[in-house]
Image 1 (tube, helix red, strand yellow):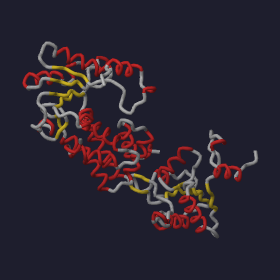
Image 2 (tube, helix red, strand yellow; image 1 turned 90 degrees about the vertical axis):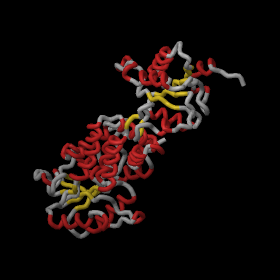
Image 3 (cartoon, chains in turn blue, purple; image 1 turned 180 degrees about the vertical axis):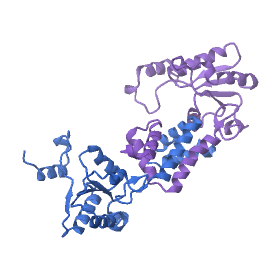
Image 4 (tube, rainbow over the protein chains, first blue to last red; image 1 turned 90 degrees about the horizontal axis):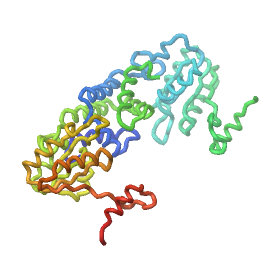
Length: 199
Length: 199
């Protein structure tokens, strides 16, 4: 089809590059754009460019922000003694949404993964250590993902901080709330037993 | 989260407006854009604008095109005696992909739907009739969707052409190839029996 209409072909290609968008969906989206109001299409394109123009990383924690410091780092009323270390800004959002954590964050922008050529220097670990030397934090919660890479990163950071007076903690593993024991995988179940708590 | 970053909020909103993209997917896509190369994001935005700038409707059949006439209408080697009437350019593509049809098309850009305030004048029916008076076609195949609106549109057009020497045909209903009788709905099955053919 699109063999004969280059501009549509190109838009379908662009949509196909997005995560989770297959060829069929990309086609559907491109045809939706064709039928959009001129001003809506302009707003859509402009909002893509605006994000690229405005979004930068917080100078302190590397969260995304439109200013020098993100809104969390700018907030002086939070708990200065604890920093939660996450892999990505989306993980930060997930934790913020729990409203359970009132400290500050540090976004690593990835996890150590030798297979993908990502070593400690490719993510914001050095910046974390430097920051800990200047800050008055006495605990870091390592909230990297429970994957091989996330665990490796957690181990690496905790080794770096061994011997300092900073307490290093890790999120608890266990059965998800509302989950079903029967369907929990064995490792999660083992971790849940290991981490059992007195009622 | 995005309460504190207006530009991301806006991009998530824009993605949410696309068909089949929910709030979670929109968030995922927006964060993907943040991490895109500057030039890739620019290309993406530009391809949206380019489609809006370049795509227009063919003056003859109302298919999408970048020129006055679409590539099909420009092709003099096709069969001038038959026009296939479809609701949308995507339906046209679907039929083109079968490589079974060598005539021309007419894209209605919708179907009659009184519930949505779409009457015969809101779609390209008048243009079809005018075209038939000038062309040398002697058959139109009405390939509107097998929905209430598509059927109403087919009936309307066939009534308009009653008394002329133009043969009006409709796509056959029946069991989809590779389909399973057991799972076919009753109406389709009834139509398949009604339209049975001698072997």
